[in-house]
Length: 225
Image (cartoon, rainbow, N blue to C red):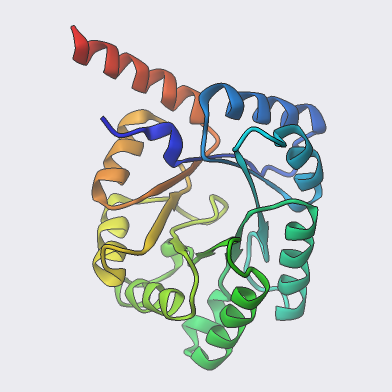
């Protein structure tokens, strides 16, 4: 069976999160051996300290959740994330510029973010699929790939809808087999997570990680009986 825990970005991006919440998040990540924890920029230093030496990566966000910040602000936020210890950065594409077909702007911004988030930092670009047509989703995903990012990500979790199986299938067809797809937004149970992985997602962003893994353990136990 798939090692589901190693595909999960254990996430807390709600504005009311406290240091105690971050500490709990990191303890859970260690206990379940999740791929990463994802926190808002102000908590990266704390999370990086708590996870030092564990092998669990810290991720953070830039231009989140709207994607409408100036490029210089997104770049500075990403730089600060990395300086504070983030090994992965999820940035929101400028969706308004994309929808009005200002592709030169979008490409230039993504390339600048790729320059800042240089290897080995992993760069994921959120395209907020719920705001795009199917053709726009495919075009955005290809643009993200062409600009050198590592993943295209479905949603912020703050938009009108989250990850959908149909969108992951569509994105996988658009970017091919070798590119990263992160499904995020509204993933609350193991069945949904596994369906998204089967559809082509190779990373799952969720705040319900512990619940998902407890359900997954029950599935594994049932399979051995």
